[in-house]
Amino acid sequence: MKKLLLLSSVLLVALTLTGCGSNTDDQDPDVCTNNAANGTLYEFDKNQTEVVTIKVWLDDEAYATALIDAFEDLYPDIKVEWEQVGSVDTRQRLETYSGSEYAADVVVFPHDHIGAALNSNLLYPFPDSLRADLIDRMVSSAIGTATSCYDSENNTAVACGGDYESELFGAPLSGESVALFYNKTLLESIDDTKTYPEATWEEIIASALDYNQPLIVDDPNTADVDESQDQKLYFALDVGNAYDMHFVATAFGFDLFGEDHLDKTEANLGSTEMINALSWLNGTLRPAVLNLNNSSLSGDANKALFESGELAYIIDGPWDIQRYKSAGELNGFEWGVAKIPTINGVQPITFSGVQIAAVSKGTNEPTAAFKFVEFMTSDEGLAILYATTNKLPALKDVSTVAGVATDEYLSGISAQLAYSHPMPIIPEMGYFWSNAGTMYSSAWNGTATPAEAAETAQTGFNSQANIS
Image (cartoon, rainbow, N blue to C red; front, side, top):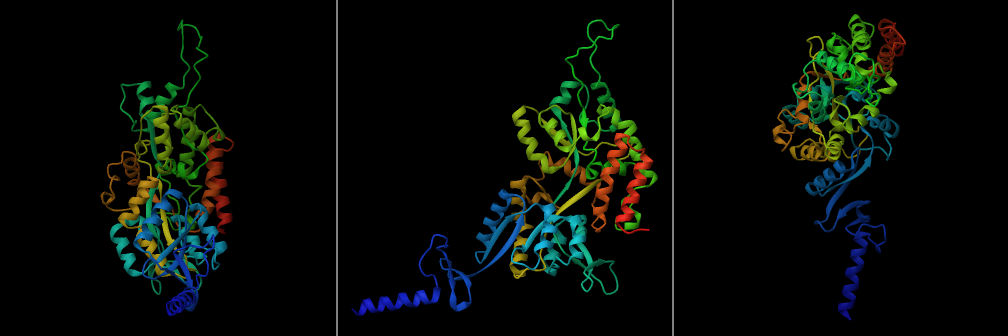
């Protein structure tokens, strides 16, 4: 009887301490709430480790799952909740939910969203120790995209100097740029005497004009053609996409927002350099693409042609490498990636993008959140990123992540990154996108002259940016 009473007492004390009650279908059997500690979570199978929970927004399920599993193995005292949110949607979503339970503690977004995020007071500055580690290991230009001086009283990025010292507001994860993707198999079937990829746009255009011509059959003195031989595209560009088309403008000397890319009064959309670039697009490049309008050269249509093995060249980025790997295996063609060819002897400069991991200023668990970011940017975390997404880590020395240095596709992206500059981070960048895309399309289609298209874009930008 005494043994029974003693056992009952022990059980009563245990239930009082843990507050576990009876197991329900939705209760985690390994985690209980301790009422005496005001709801603090403990893992009773891990020596009663106190647990905190953070929420992260990531856009890739395979990456998120592998990353979180590895992190929680290393830090059993931190539970990570994941929500799938596209990186381009993250900043606006964080603005909407900032300060509420629905906001994430850790987010990933393109570096050019940082200016607007700072103006909305969304980002937590990095601790000095983590900043020093990232500066030591990451590409300096990538670090620069996430570094700013900040006026906390007015919630705005400001010029450095005086009372304002630079701070780091994000950790570079991966670098990306468009480059030249080419179908080795198709090119060799067209002319196996040439070296591919072709090194200049002059060569590509000449080959395209030749490839696009219908074949003369039977009597060469007649105009008879083999009507079964449809005209085909040799290459394609997403003409209305200002990100993709930037390489053309820079080949003619265009500088967006001035030399340091931070001066909104120097958008230069109406500049002579831009007009020359638009003239080349309409007069020289368009005839080599069957004079198709931009509506027939959408990104999705171009990608589908390359996937099917029907397109020799396309301008694309690392985000589609896995897509083309699968297509090449399915449709039986080999392909490669190289830096973009020269235009009139000038090496084009592309926009480089950096995916940034940041901590929300509204987090209630900054220590845990920064531990997660630290793990994301570790060699182990970046190896997971590469293995699951095939993205290029923003490291100075990529050899620390197995496989990256010898990746035949990412080596082409890296070659172009040497001729790129980060997309400007100033908030007015949004006005560039909305005006430049229309400018490229209208000049290409001939619905406006290059000068008219450039002037319209500059006027639209000035209006939106409140520049008189």
